[in-house]
Length: 181
Image 1: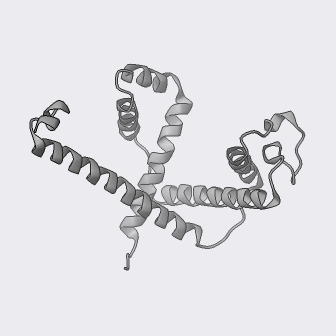
Image 2: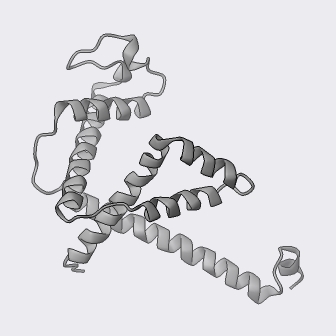
């Protein structure tokens, strides 16, 4: 009880409840991520289609930069179809892995966008506002600064709505899915 009181709880039971809620929340988050991964894997394993070269190249640059953070900026060097400044110095195996990741991301992005479009799934202003407030809550004492940042940066608002849209599409797919053990 003394330990619980020093930590801001009434008694040991209050501390246990708080820890239980935290563990349950972490478990729910991990479970959601696993289910989402399974849905995305199932979509990715579906019918294979070619991806637009410009979208692929953009995503490849992003993946290669993440894998190779010390690479020169893409605009510092001339590029051709087989070379990117972002993958300079990477092994052939790493380049192939970056290509596979980029292709998968672009395909999934196109599939998710099409599923959302075909089923009238959209991100409402209310959805975005809730996400912004959730993000602000992650920075105690700086909430107002975070809110102002999002109000002044439409690109940041757009970046926050992307994951919301993806989650809504995943939820739709899960509603339509026939789950088997």
